[in-house]
Length: 426
Ligand SMILES: C[S@@+](CC[C@H](N)C(=O)[O-])C[C@H]1O[C@@H](n2cnc3c(N)ncnc32)[C@H](O)[C@@H]1O
Image (cartoon, rainbow, N blue to C red):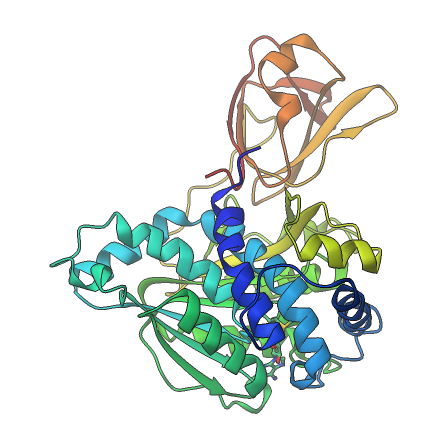
């Protein structure tokens, strides 16, 4: 199968990652003993970040073995997660690139908690692609490859130094600024005027163990949003674990309460009477929301995963894209049940129920709605229902109304129309 935009761009960075790790020029492959040592550090790092989480709050990127495992394994994973998430706002990125090119200035990207820079690299690759098709003022910025400037902030100087070297190698001409900061101590740079801010897998590490962590994270994001240019956005990506994902969704709700809007992945976040709470949060404490894209990992990720005994068949991530200025316009009131049209994002895998029906959960932004069809049903199959995947955008018009007045559910019949836009297809 043809590699996606995100995968093919990721693979161009692999030789640099391996060279940064080996501290010398080399190919993309590791010796067996190198694979073994990296996979052992990876397992220890993974336990510290996702199990008891005892590495959170510790400056673990300063540890050579952990930073090495991060470069060779987590860097590619984070890159893909952010790339797929950012592609869901590709038209907004194109508009920001056009505005920067018109003003003959570089597009400015800020990466918070950048580590060795995978999120910033993912966004930079999408922006460079968008800039290549812009009609810039005089074309000179793009031709000189200095159409982008990036600022990376982190508490770890070692990881910032790897990011600087990676950008020097793989993004020649891109202006790179780095600074050591502790976000919890408020030492955020006072720089402003960023078109895109990205924060990947870092928000969940802030204010661990603090009872007011959600409010503190929301206040932090609000401060960062103030550094955006008009039309700019902030992409916050987090691991798709239950706790980190739900915390992100709770912070998202706080940002909506403060008047900010979510551009993606949520279908619609408010009506005339106010913001909707995230339906995954209201659905109960075991519910969450994340995107997933299948992936056959390249080396050295595949070899490290195999030796560490980790399944790596996809990337999963929870993310929100927040817009800079508090929302002023309200969207029209939501329609009442039973719905004639269901428009939103698929937030589940296809699940087979006891009645032999495949059902998908679709989040409209206001609520989660279940739509089902008998497994293998030829009408539903012809209309593409069984090819739904997590985070695809769908509009189902004239669904079959099933159940009764008190418990409406929906199906697919001959009169149903489906518009289906797959997630992360480029
Ligand atoms: C899991 S890594 C994520 C790195 C990269 N953004 C990615 O997506 O792969 C979390 C990063 O947040 C940084 N970090 C954690 N707490 C921080 C704090 N209080 N101030 C600044 N950076 C912090 C860590 O040093 C680390 O580089």
